[in-house]
Length: 254
Image (cartoon, rainbow, N blue to C red; front, top):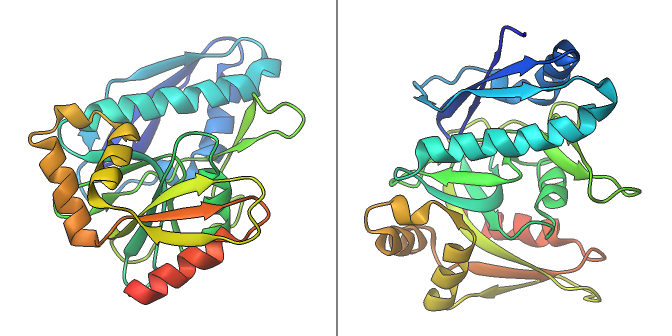
């Protein structure tokens, strides 16, 4: 049994113990992949339920890493339920101001790819789950990026943001703008459009976690939108350059 890893994200911490015949190999791989979540934050985190993961065959390591990422995320979300507004989203922050783009989308819509592109010029916060406090503060979750394998799309590699050379946020991150990702094959350019309030709220509800645990959940969403400005929809395809459209949006609202 390993000594355990304390992984920080969403303003919470979960202790992960790696067990089994290949438990040490699992712990070593996780220390590399979860490098930024091992760093102790300046504020005291909320404790999440401890997690035990088992690996007996080192050949199963990629699959176990992928499943463990899902479990860690689930535990951290549970620890902040009733406290934070949480979206299925990626996020990056301006290095100087901390103003952050939160791009909300269902799985398989390109959050990880977009995070890799944007975080060459902005600070990486997460590629999966964004937690937002009542004052608009974002609690980073700089987890490993889940990169889908071309030859086996059902399997993802958990890659450290350090290994990918992604930038770190400098200033405390706050929501600058909420963006809904809408990937459409065949588009030749990316388009940004404002989303009507009711449509924005309904879409954000669908892509949220533990929203009903919050007091006044719809009011919290409306207040967040009011504070950050109209929600924007980004329509794009893999052939376009959506990161340039989003970077322009940050510059407009800085």
